Image (tube, rainbow, N blue to C red; front, side):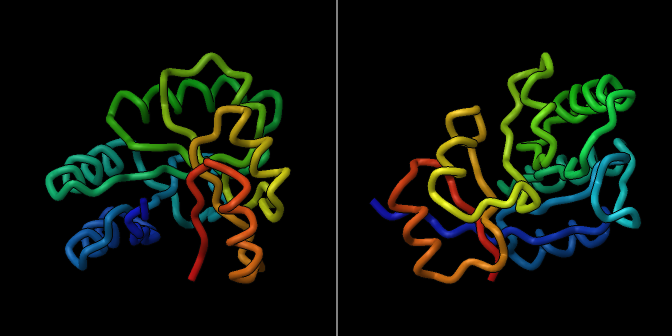
Length: 161
């Protein structure tokens, strides 16, 4: 059975997210208020909630990015933020720091960011076994490498084109 290809678009902010949905994106990813690798792409909980409401009207999904390495004193702040994001109904969280896997979390879907260096089948299998549903592959991979990883795992794979 072939899986549907999903068009996932970046959304720096609510306006760009709405534009992506209007243009036919199946999903958007948007920066959280904190802990995003793009410091100029942070969004309030209120804007993310509005993005979720709008996207869900069109059966589109919203993934929120928390893709920095966390310091020990940020772990509890991050955990509380994840609960807020879960409560507003985001569809998944894109993470880099594996400390998040050790937190007491709500039943939120987790994706492994490309920043986790996802470039071979063993690493992708490790992430899948750790509870990651989708793995964003390293941007440098060629099509043969993507195919090799796909054949070796049942994790959802995402890659840049």
